[in-house]
Length: 207
Image (cartoon, rainbow, N blue to C red):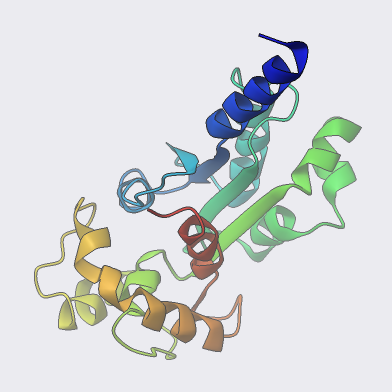
């Protein structure tokens, strides 16, 4: 094989093997993990890591995982997302997780501070299940987590069970409605969610 042919063959192999890699670090133990692992992606790979820690610590955990990535040591993951809820966390903790202005004091090294800018957040008030509810209605009344999950969501998903694995397929046909409803809400007010931004990114790599 000529050198030119070898170069062309190498490019084809590299192109075929290259996939967009998502790291999604989320607070929920199963709900978020089950949902995001259900996306049927062909040109991307997703690693979902559940961590029951506060939002600011979640961002730091994502940076740590990315730095220790063994597949691509130089560049890490292509997209890094932290998925978390307002729930009972303080405004300051949320602000530290979201703010770009505090990166130099929030992280131990300049490299970590720069990497923090690569982290994107999908933030819900009061909780992730609001994203499910928006598939059925443009909900805009202030609500607590226990009311949303225990009363509001069952009005549309009568058989809903927290952490169920089939929720993605069950509500998929209404995903476009959810995206539009989410965009109408004012983040980070109650209720609001930016989960739709992550969903739109994942949808770019569907079958």
